Length: 360
Ligand code: NAD
Ligand code: DAU
Image 1 (spheres, rainbow, N blue to C red):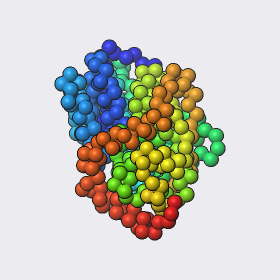
Image 2 (image 1 turned 135 degrees about the horizontal axis):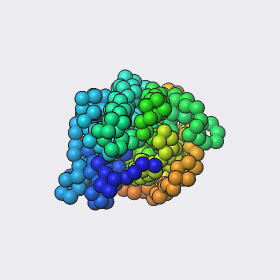
Image 3 (image 1 turned 30 degrees about the vertical axis):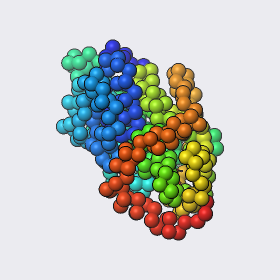
Image 4 (image 1 turned 30 degrees about the horizontal axis):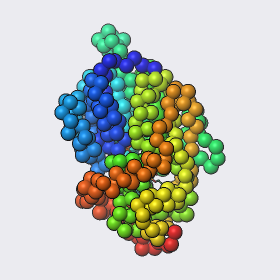
């Protein structure tokens, strides 16, 4: 637990991405005086349009500062951390398939970037000891269920061994381990969240649900990896954002908290449901060559976070319907994202696979 100032000033890294921007929109819309500085590199996944609802409201816009920069850049990070009451680190390269094509950026942000944030936090802890600051900020390291690896049976608990199986997951696990090491070694106030597969408005169309919804709207083929029986736990983006905030103010320093979803489903079933919502046929789905090292199942035990008083609010049925409807109503947003570098990425990922695809 950490004391919440009446009007906290939060540094939100990766706040122009999918989950980070949901966190920013959620908190500023409450109009409780909270201020947020977003630090975002605006990679292909960062999108200032995700913060448009905040910008469109002068009262909220006045409490948002946007800084374009890299969490791996000490000169940028240190003054921002010094000015914050708390830091929430959403910044990461987040797509497993891209980590398989090109791992380096994942390590730079996930390992060096997290280290730079933690070092800036350590300086603040030292300033408290020197009497230059009243309380050191807390840092929430936003992590993932993928650090536990593929879970054949049962559910992963926070103290289970880490067994990441993709470069993305390995970089995230390294971030977790660094965060915990800084807590143990320097007494830094760090908490770690491990969220499950998240879905909702503003998600980049490289990910399963938005890719399949936007392809289906255009009657394009839907590339289902392998047999499509891989299982994921689905978590609504606002639930994820609120869980991170709950851990920020109520979690114990040095601890990890799983954030499970509200439904565990095989990919085929997710696809069947989104097609039903869109009124599109299953014949769009094509079975394509599997992702290398594809994790078969993720599943986490959420008892620790439940004991802290958090519950997911959005059932998957309602959340998926709202998400599909959002993509239908917001074509301008996703058509703009699916341009430029998107085309080369799509070709590289899917052209050969789709050429050799089979009925699903
Ligand atoms: P995203 O790819 O949509 O957004 C990531 C954001 O980070 C982008 O705005 C990007 O510009 C920014 N960024 C990347 N590198 C940066 C750097 N070096 N410095 C500053 N900003 C940088 O990702 P997301 O899906 O919103 O995921 C956010 C976090 O949540 C990630 O840490 C991810 O590992 C974690 N997570 C995601 C999910 C999920 O299902 N999407 C589930 C569990 C955990
Ligand atoms: O579990 C949490 C993780 O969820 C996060 O840490 C990651 O940042 C996030 O990207 C997500 O990872 P996944 O690899 O599970 O998500 P993705 O949307 O890429 O894939 C979901 C499932 O769908 C997975 O089993 C692979 C499959 N899939 C995905 C794509 C993009 C397909 O069958 N076809 C596809 O084209």
